[in-house]
Length: 399
Image 1 (spheres, helix red, strand yellow):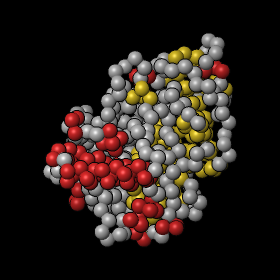
Image 2 (tube, helix red, strand yellow):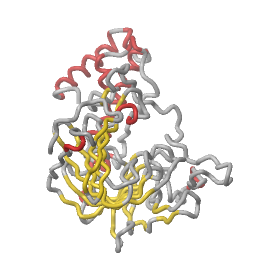
Image 3 (cartoon, one colour):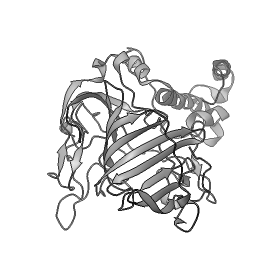
């Protein structure tokens, strides 16, 4: 938050209230009055998403007269924007994006200009086959309620029901080339006691094994090519930010068709190795223009943080049988954007992730000991490495 104590806020609120009765520029209905009101609306939503636990949000949703305000439709005219307004309406008072060196200033995150879902829900027909390039359930809105099994983003209307959006293994992009994960409803969000609710956040430090069914880079709903791999994921939260390290065991690793290791650092540098018999033989560094945030200009994308799932919405509690698991488990089903997550009620460990145009991951063997992640010298010394697009020096992070 951009203030140190509630006293600061209370003094500010007192002054703003006095201005609405003593200064014509701030009378109700003026553009300055509206800017003050809309700044508060944006700040309320930010507090709700980033500073309240999911259990607290669930509790407030059952308070009869509690109403969460809407985000402003647009920013206020510049002449009506106070310093407080700028802090309330922006995201970077809390988040630190990585600026692309030598580029113009970063632009704000693009705002949605309609109530439609952020990502296209159906794909165009392939002229060669006459079928959609990637099949998703064609029925949307009320007609699709209860039928959106392969895909149900969090901005779909009506909101996803339990066992919608579960996805599953694919072997092509046609309607009959995928297998839904077995799922049955246990309860709606309102049925889950708040003291028995899971958290969709990762631990700050951990390692875990995963089966992966991924497409790269995974940003276009209508361009997917899933491939199977197995990994070990090692994750640290350093004082500079998250360090995300994968060790490829079988199958392709990221953009490489071969198994390898990857190291993603807070400055957006992404190193990936080609491994032979478990030993790295070559390393490349990717970043820069190849790793730009598609929602804003001149902002590089760093690794996931441990709390990347802040603000996720709870769909419900389900009995599921994740891929590569021999038994059913009861899990809470969360969604953020097009990304779905299942957390085991018994252990509070993430079991599964599904994003229909990014991938499917099944996790097992969680270990909460902080892993020692070290970038191999291969990636910054000698002749067997190349910097393809990174714009920052090798980070001084060894573990």
